[in-house]
Image (cartoon, rainbow, N blue to C red; front, side, top):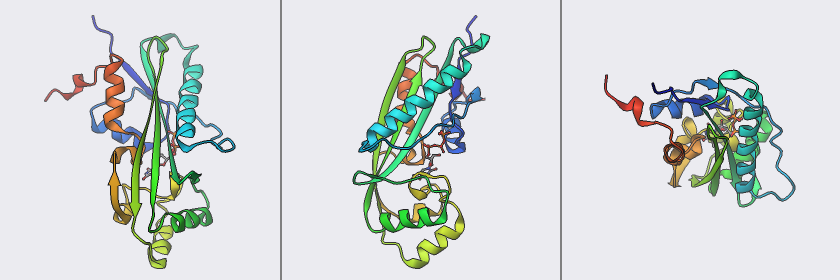
Amino acid sequence: MTVPQKLILASGSPRRVELLVQVGIEPARLLPMDLDETPKRAEHPRSLARRLSAEKAKAALAAIKGEADWHGSYILAADTVVCVGRRILPKPELISEASSALHLLSGRSHRVYTGICLVTPDRTFRQKVVDTKVRFKRLSNLDIESYLASGQWRGKAGGYAIQGIAGSFVVKLVGSYTNVVGLPLYETVNLLVGEGFDVHGSWIEG
Ligand SMILES: Cc1cn([C@H]2C[C@H](O)[C@@H](COP(=O)(O)OP(=O)(O)OP(=O)(O)O)O2)c(=O)[nH]c1=O
């Protein structure tokens, strides 16, 4: 008898769930981890994405360790960081923060790093950081004001969501699109397959 594999997604991000479901992976459980995401002094954005994704995975592992049926589960966590040069942009909750971020992104290229961390059933930690280069058009005052009014910036790294209105700001994108949304699908599936997770099982028609 084969034991069904379970994936615990250590995330509260609906985008990450949607991306996994898009490739046929239905997380058995969502376990959002509320961590302090403040960067360390002079921390590189790539290192921040790597560190936070590992911390989310570690916290999720600690949370389920005492449970009898966690054996055989995989845990996946991710963290997305947007930066202009080495300047890390916040995940704005205030309109003023979102406005500053959009002014900074206007007419420039920036990078989006997503760290992914997979904990295997034997508790091995496997990590990867993926980066994407994105160039925005020059945003007019009307673009910025209207975008701020949309509220789509709230809680999103860098103060925008490429899967919404801000998709129309993108002049050029080099790398993974899904990485910008919050979970790089190629690399995530690769990591899962490499660690023995059956991603293909759900692809059968009917
Ligand atoms: C740049 C960008 C970010 N985002 C989102 C993805 C993430 O949800 C968020 C980055 O913050 P994260 O800290 O990576 O994720 P989160 O706090 O939303 O969720 P969790 O830690 O529980 O997994 O920004 C978009 O949805 N679209 C985009 O274009």
